[in-house]
Image (tube, rainbow, N blue to C red; front, side, top):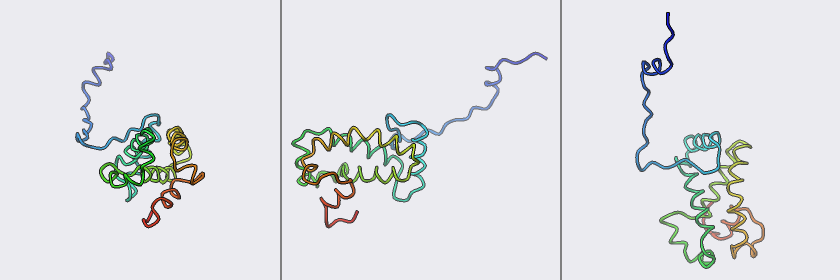
Length: 151
């Protein structure tokens, strides 16, 4: 019996269609992370009640964009607090990333931490708040800036 060619076998198989994501669906891709870590983040976003799909990538993008703002905009953090209602508070985004890193495996947390390290260092060098507060973690920095708010 003659052997069939692989393309003939594939053509005979039923094609599985991948479900297309809606146009406005959130992106789960974070540049520089492995597929394994992205799958782990996606699993966290689907299993934790406080997270929604795409929250991690949105938080990374918000934090990196905030850090790259001009210095004059970084100095007006408290004045611009009402502006963050539309796009999100960058310190809250960074705190969310800390919480996500706690839920990841060591390898995944190390990868995410390495991606955020450059932005964190840039913020520590440029932010007018860092010399006043010392080397605080982001959750304690948020509590210092917003004493009346829970978090």
